[in-house]
Length: 407
Image (cartoon, rainbow, N blue to C red; front, side, top):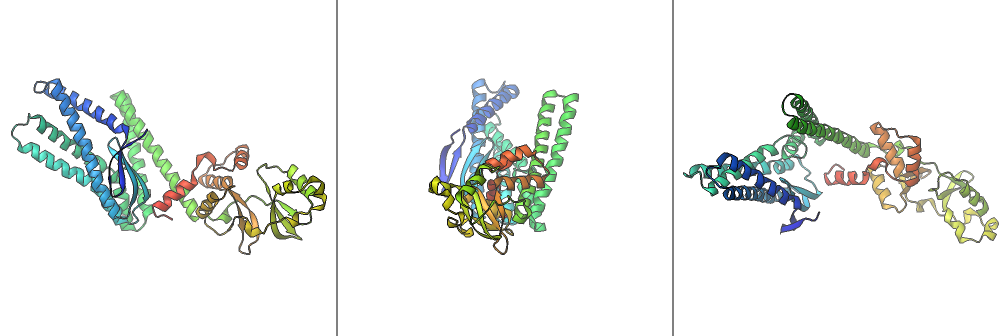
């Protein structure tokens, strides 16, 4: 669904998603019902709806104002933000570059909770100093203050995407000097809390309220799965950072002697097992001298195939996109995505060809490191399509790591 831009500051567009209006309506309806139930003798239905709508509107507007100040601090700490879109009770940042220091991340994480507490303190103090607590305006001010107080405490929970989670891992990063220690510890905390919520939800499910028990069980199960996914994501990052091309099982090169004629090349092409293979590497008495594309057959008349030799049409090895066997895996993936065919030749220290690498080979290696062993039939289909298996978007993971300064 399309978002609408409400303003632009520091070159960053601030947008509102249609879901924001849905939460505005739900909050208005919920607060108006609460007013009717608790203060029906003071306010009529119309006044209850006014309190509900204005309390919701000013509360959600305060979140937007907090986000502006949060953005200002983020920019000062080196974060590059492309755009900000407001959903429900927060915003989604599209970030090109993250803060690279632990102290900077601590400052960024603490801004929103402090702003919520400051707003809540001012509004609650104002409402308490007014004699008539039954005024609609005072009721609205008090409710907005309480909602900000609740949101401030909510943001401080040590849960993954909340400010409390970012704050916890950044503090550990600051004192330990290791970003990974902070991430690992936060993930363990999330897993422990999720298990507690899941167990409490199951207990409520059978002993107290089925509805709330089901919701808590679902949230706990979702948290457990998210923690496991984060753990696997972290393992993938380590595989990409520390593995080398030499660790992979390469695709063997298809050889052809330089004095082979086009008829012999055509026979090899007809008998090939993998339809995606189109390159042959030319040898001369065991030495690699170049490579040819099977499409060279189309450049010569069939009648002349017996008199034309592969060696006369070969291209130098260096013309094939190549990498060193000692290169890091993440660099190879970046290079691979720049090629038109998704194939790279691997050379050793002496520039001797060792084999071909493609997306399926890299994907299978990553899955094997994670403990997944796919059936051979499935692997053969992947090799033919030259795709990363199971939807693993390795290039996007690498881009995210670079944005966070991990590469």
